[in-house]
Length: 171
Image (cartoon, rainbow, N blue to C red; front, side, top):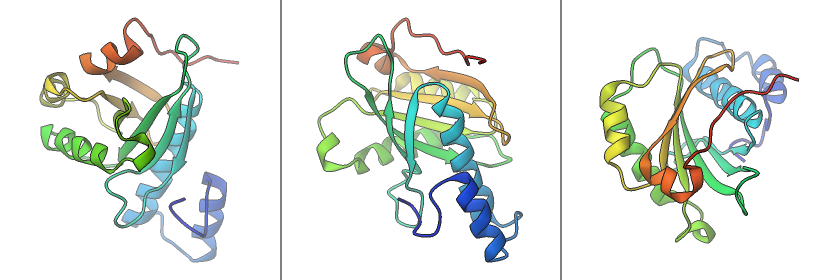
């Protein structure tokens, strides 16, 4: 886990209140967004654990995506960017680097890397994802937790996501 003091959004909010962590601080905004992202993707079949901390190899969330058509869960790493700036191809390269930091037992497996942000994907980001040989995707998640965009590259499609559609189920 990323912190000995919290492991969920409610426990983080309680911790932040207890230590008077201002909601305007970068660490608050980033940690809050990581938990919101994990909860948002849970509705799509993801099971993610927050790992974000200093020296986290660029991995904020780690876990699996459980898709009924597939025989086994897809290992996933997630980089969260709760920023008011649009991302660039540089961020796709950073995600590619984070894929090198997967746990040893995942080495040699097809791990999906996801870049999650509050802003939509630019043409440059989509082109960089498309050129990449590693299985990668882009997800736009609002600060409130609404999944607004979810795309993945050809490499991810070839590793089992071909023909898979993503929708939020309302229950």
